[in-house]
Structures are given as C-alpha cells and as structure tokens.
Length: 398
Image (cartoon, one colour):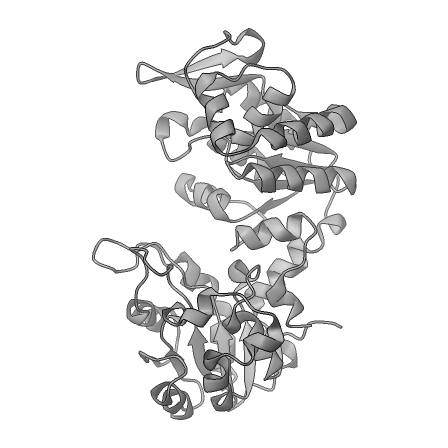
C-alpha cells in the first residue's frame, strides 16, 4: 500500500496532529542553541497553515533524566518566529486542556503541545495496535481529524506518538518524511558509480551499511574512515596501536573485526582502506603511513591523514553518487578535523551526494560545507534505511 502524503489530505479547517522532531541542542539556560530541527519542518507546517488546517504539533525534547529534558515553550516561541501564523503553547499533551487548545484553534493557527516524553508511555515501544490504546493516543485522537508524521529522525522508534495515531486516524507523511523516503529508500535509482564513505564510531551499524551496499550492488566502492577504518585495518593485519585496540575491545567490537575480515575477503577490491592516519603526540597532530606504523605504540588514531584524503578525493571525483555515513575522525577537535573536512568537501562535488544525518550532518554544519543534494534529518533512521531495514513509523503509515 502506498503512503499518503499532504497531497492526499483535505486540510481546510481540519484539526491535524503533526508529529515532528524538534529535539534540539540547548544552552545552559534552557534556550535553543540551534533551530535547524525546527526549520526542517517549516515547509510542512507552512503548507498546512496556508491550506487552512488547525495544527497541533507533537514533539519531544531530550530523554528523562537528561539535562535537555525540558518543556517545549521555547520551541513554540521560536516556531512562531519561523511561521507566518499564530503559534501558541499548551503545557499538556492529551489532557482536557490540550484537547480544548486544539478545538479552540481557528483555521491557519498552530498550537505546540507539551513534550510527549513527559509521559512514561512515550519512551516505551509498542506494536501499533497496543500504542493506539495508550493514554496519549486515546486522550488526544478524539480532538483530531487527521495525523501527519513528519518526524523521520524518530521513525525507527515504535512509540505511541509515532505508530499509535495511524491506528485511530487517517494518516499521512509530511514533506520531510516524504523527501527522506524518496531519497534514502531509492538509492538504487541514483547515478552510478556509487561510493559510500563509511566511518564514525557506531561500528556495527556502519559495517552493516557497508555489507548491505556491497552485497546488493548499491556501492561500487566503499571508503572506510573513523573507528570503522581502525576495525578494517585491524582485520587486514595492521597494528592500530594500543589505545585504539583497547577502545575496539572495550566497545565489544571484536566480532566486527571478524565481519570486516570476511568483507575484505569477499569484496577487497571494492573496499579502500586509509593510506595514513593522524595521531596526537605531545599535543600535536602527527601523520603516520599505515605501512610504517610502529608496532605497540600508545597513541590512538584520531583521524585519517592527508594522503588518504587525497586518495579518497580522487575516487569521489568520479562518483555519480556519494553517500556519507560517519565522520573520518574526532572532528570536534580542530586538530583532527582535516580528514572529515577534506573527505566531505570532496563528496560534495559528486554528481549526487547524500549526507546520512546524525554526526555526519553535524560535521557538515560545523564546517559550513554546502552543495550536497540531500542532507538527512535522521541518524538512526537513515542508518536503518541504508541497511535495508524497515522503519516502524513508516510501516504504520502504509
């Protein structure tokens, strides 16, 4: 069954619950440090406002016990500045006050309801039928005519606000969700040759991305960076140093070395390993050739080296599609940002380029890089699609 989109929604004067992902970094005083997550949903919300819907926004911020677990009042205020509409805030989500706030909206008005995760049901996961029976869904659904899910970044969760409402209401994908599925769900239709840059510290997920891309003919080449590269180098018999080896073992990634070895045995000519790496020595960046790494050294690998950046850039220069999944090193530290900056800048020059969300998107923003064809709003959700898995919140829309 196809997923309905806003094109299929009769929005005029309808009370529409819109699940978005406003989860944002906060400053010390609880204000928004970055409104990128809010701006991502402006197209969906503006369209509904212009078409005369009465919009109730559902979102979460942080996790219980975390410093960023807070109310959505600041989000509502900022959203009012971004939208050409009256935006109010309600400190409830499914209580009488929340239902009355929705019912009291005029066409083209918006209310931001309280943080969905203030309610214990929302940080548990359910099958859709059971999610539809939670207090959150049962309490709010009667005040709504339709439900729109635009929260792609949370689509890998099976929480009530994501999978419960489609059991009770006509359900639609918002424009963010629609774009993400069109791009990440159709990698096989993008220009060839396809080059995947697989890095970061989430090694099991990244190895699965590489395996899926190679086994299904989605990638002609896979370039490995970050901790993922250390795992592949170790699988290739390279001594990556005591500190990096201990990190791999402390994270329980020994089996990933075995998986990487299997991939190298089967697809070795399509997997490219770093030529050199950068370590920290006396507070300075020192680049070492992989072929000349001294055995048993203490320094951890913090980045790929300049020869690797040049070699990867040569591969990416001929790419029809570049898919970025994970940074090349500790990019938050400017001393070790060169690898991520250089590889990502080269990927932006591909005919078609996809940024896989999460830390990858954060690095893109940090470096001010532009020119990418698609930057995903989701890290975990993007990973799921790139590994061929389904997303509970998407399946609930079908």
